[in-house]
Amino acid sequence: MCRSIKTLRPPYAESVTEDDRRAAALQYVRKVSGFREPAPHNAAAFERAVDQVAAATTELLDSLVVKGH
Image (cartoon, rainbow, N blue to C red; front, side):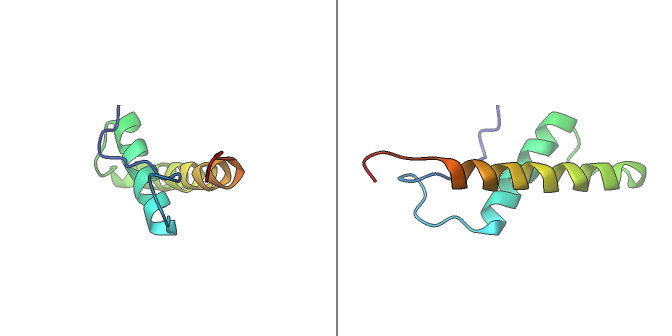
């Protein structure tokens, strides 16, 4: 679906920054919404979605247990 989103969990990513998580969230929201940049009347909803996806990504990565690493 979003081929430009890189895998953020170990062992594929040694260190993941907030910027990495936000970039992945932004790519996801762009793909789902169909907008690269939202119109001004959609900007707040777009940014809120990016924030929520980034938070969910952080929660997921913090909760994963990768055996063997």
